Amino acid sequence: MLRASKMTVVVLAAAGFALLGHGPASAGCQVISATHSADTKSEALKSSQALAVESANELKRSKGWKYVTMSARRVKPDPFWKAVRPVVPKDVIYGSFVTARTYTTCFTGVVVPYVCTSGSAVCGN
Image (tube, rainbow, N blue to C red; front, side, top):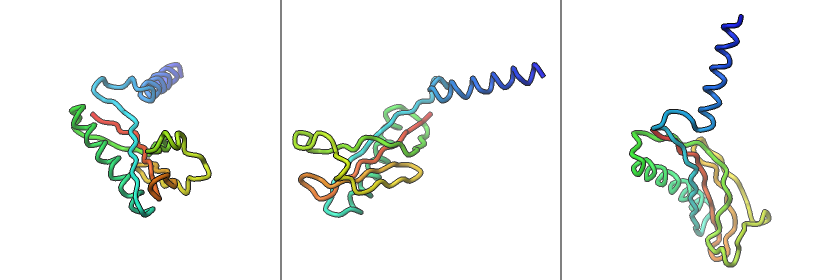
């Protein structure tokens, strides 16, 4: 019984360290975001998601990782014209779109009709 309790503590501690980022020294994760604007909703959405994948691949190359995994992560919407609109108000957000790899928030732009920001946690080794 005592042995089972010790094993449970070891397993929980290992899981806790993994969640806190204290796993193997060569593994790591980073949150990325990618923003794109377009004349159509679908183009802004698809382009933002594609830029997130491109950013993940650039991170992979820069870190020298053999592989990366992406998981959707909500990030703050990023307006291009921060001098005009420093924060994206809730009344201009028209949708959030979640896939296995990206969490995308789309909103109406100041200069362009549509803007989307995609976020992802990129982990590699």
